[in-house]
Structures are given as structure tokens and as C-alpha cells.
Length: 258
Image (cartoon, rainbow, N blue to C red; front, side):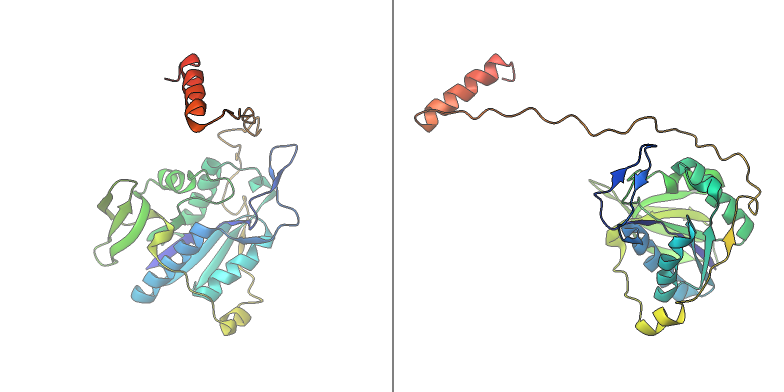
């Protein structure tokens, strides 16, 4: 069985600056594995240990992402693959999904893809559904528990943890699964394994390797500004609580709130 886990590197500190071209400026901020992707890596490792086969951690980014890929290898991933090309620098989630889908097709033997629910930098949550759409595979989102994964019958059964209910859903493999943080507790890689993978250099595939040329983003961000500041509030004064409440009610009636 071949499981692929999509992993993104994100800034540890969310208080990043925005560049003039509206991209995120994370200079000088430590990079870490995306929180939800860490749970995806752990889930992939657990099922790989149960069924055997291969677990590939796949990233789309620059060579500086290799350090977090090595962390996934130290956790227990068996293989790693980096998709890196200057043409990938400004991809939106839909275009990024198309690139990853091309890599999945080139790998050829993938049975299951785990992704995090969303990344903690752009918070779009669009990548996993877009990847499933690009591949034409079933998508299982907001997964809080994988109940059954059967390589023989090519079936997966999961719990989807929604806001007001928990759904039990089955789907044929191959499929794309995006997980929430309640699904498991990621392991800490052992120091011996960290040292063992410290110099591993994963293979790198470019746009040409994937046979891709037209990578224009489907959506273009034209503006990114913070919401306007809230107007300054008014402090109601009065000799006692009753008079303050009366003044407040009068103002609410005047403003047609009540």
C-alpha cells in the first residue's frame, strides 16, 4: 500500500508582514511543519506501520522545506518528494493542487492521500478538496477518526467530525482524506532517527519533470488590507447603575437596536 502525505511548511509566528506584491513576508521567522499536516503525517505513519508498503511525504515549495521533510522521515515516513520550481512560487490552492495531482499521477501507485484540514498561514482549506477534484478521487474532509482501511477490498471508512454531528462515511480507494487535530497525537521523532535522516536529500521534481507549462493561478489576489478599525466606544456615566441602564436603553432605542 502506498500512502502519500501532503506537507506544507509555515511560519511559526502568525504575525507576518505582507509584501507589496501581497505575498507573505516570513523573513526571520522560524519555519515549522504545518500543524494539521503533522497530524496527517502521524496518521499516515500509523496505517503504514499496520499494513506495510510505502509512505511518501510530499511537499511543494523551495529547498528550505527539506528540513521539515526530514522531520517527517524521522517520525517514520519511508520516502520524501519535493516539488520545486520558480513557476510554483505564486500558485493559488487550485493551481497547487493541479501540480500535486500531476506528481501523484507520475508516482502511479498511490492508494491514499492524507492532508491537513488547512494550513495555518493562509487558512483557505481549499487544497485537499481541489486535489481530490483534480484527481477525480473521492474526498473525505474533517476526518477525526479512520475506522477502517482495507487494502484488500480498497475501502476506507471514517468519521467526519462536523460542528453539530459526527458522520460515518465509506469510500473506495484511492481517496483524499483531510484530517483534524483530534485524530491522533503526533509522535516525537527519536534523536537516533533525526541523526539518521539529517543528510537525506529527497528527489526534486520540476514543472518540466511533471510535463506542466501553463501554471497561471485560477484566482488572483488583487488586494489584501485589514478590516477598518472599530469606532471608539462610549463610556456611559451616571450617579448609579439604574441611571446608567436607563441611559443605555435610551441610546439603544435611539439607534433602533431595540
